[in-house]
Length: 227
Image (cartoon, rainbow, N blue to C red; front, side, top):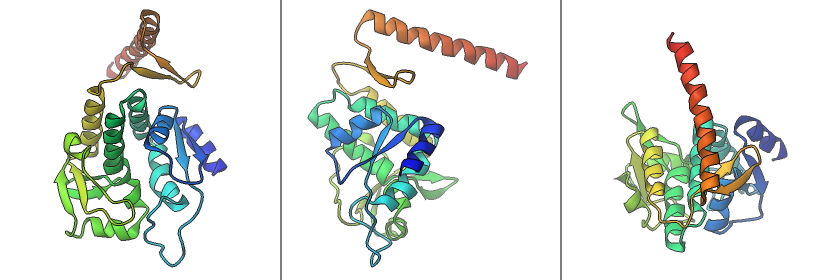
């Protein structure tokens, strides 16, 4: 796991932290804000290789790690973590449920075909096959509906939410989290690897200055490419 964690750090700035079992939703999601993914270490029993009711190291390495090595998806996952900071218990539960139906068991369409991107599906041949068998209920992607949908954790999912595209999924979740009522807005400082609260004028001006520098570089780069 240490080798994989170093690999992720080089790719996207994320690290893996070993845990003995399931964490609370708040602890797990809050860690995402710091680019930390908590990972179990045990492996599923050899008599049931196609499915495990609890996340194991196969689930983490086959399902989650490839996505956390992708810059765009890693940034999206961190946004979910940042949105969880300061969220009410009710909003946090809805956010955790949305995480479940996207990052864990998400389906989307690509070129007219149904594709899986959820780690729980990618790491379970049995449930991956089941998810497109016509047996489970496939619902249109809707964060409001998804956030209150009940789900089992020890068996195949009876319901999946299907986004029209991977991009639509990310945009819809971002729009949903932006509407959460929280006492503050949090920002991750990549240089200091700390969380900063944008709750006063100085912090906001410093944050805006960083955006201004990024925009200046972007304009210069676009000018060179277009020219």
